[in-house]
Length: 358
Image 1 (cartoon, rainbow, N blue to C red):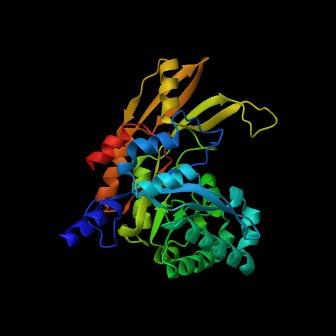
Image 2: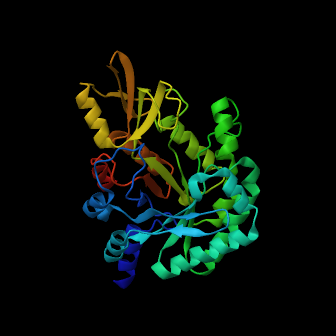
Image 3: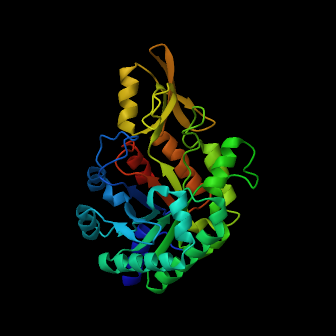
């Protein structure tokens, strides 16, 4: 009887390396209380956590940043810490490169002393807070720093594993070995996607989260945040280097919204096509305000709407329960580890029904 209980707990809480069929691990990211201005959210992350914790295997709070000197700074919300402990939810906080700054990250990756300092601080935080482990999410790293990033990740994983902690890496998606077909793809590859040695860091990590979103975003024409054909291609590419039981599929809870206007990032005040990421509550608000309706794109498995505001087209590509289910189906199809959803509190509430069904 004790053995059966242990097996049941393993199925519920951890999709183990033996890959028990479709009992996927559901990781949810939590951002700091002060949400980025580009994301509109009416639903608080903690409220969502309280309502749906039974469907959450692991939380990855956006907690710590590493600067160019290897100084690790940040903190976790005490309410999150206490709630996770009370309900036996594993905590795996994010470790990011400060500000996703390429220059500072290059300096950090060029200094073994800075890296050693960072790893010691991360280990201290794990010991102090009894974390399950950590996820490293170094983004916007230049292609030229690929080997240095790989070396740092491998060293950090070795130290943390020796001390009993789980280690994960979040990586940008690739869909081809020839990512330089367009200027946009070239920019993405040389400034972000190309920095990850999937085979090397995949062998060092307990699992890898593939951030399969931002297919369309700033600098592109309107389109899905994560069309199912593109997500499928990213999974198939990663499977060439990483086994399925080590892949967690990054899933977007936010939707894409395009409109004509000015941007706070452009001090000249130039009017142009703008993109912003919005939560599901904002999707519903805009559809109601402009009497717009969603249409289903069966090829990309996403609902979208094109409507006029002040005689100009606006576009919404909505990440909702229907598109979420399509991604869950891919997790089952390829027998992946589970999902990593970005982020808790802005999702379509109906996704929880889909998770219950799965």
